[in-house]
Length: 108
Image (cartoon, rainbow, N blue to C red):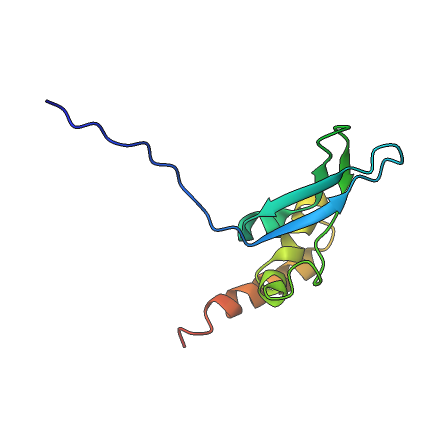
């Protein structure tokens, strides 16, 4: 008799749910997007469920006031820069150093 193992689905805690409006004049559909911390760091837009258009968008401090400092210090800007272009290597290096220092602050 074999024991069946249950299906294991990895779960991450949602950080936030943001609400946006489709920018298409004839659509204006309300779009809700749930994000984990990892997804919030990479967030750069949303897809409208009604008209299927993609809209570029960024999170602001207003969207995540409790987590804004942590997201920005731990690489929000550097990840966005790496996704778009790698023109600002010095800025990315500085943010990486700050991110490492932030992560290691309690070890010292």
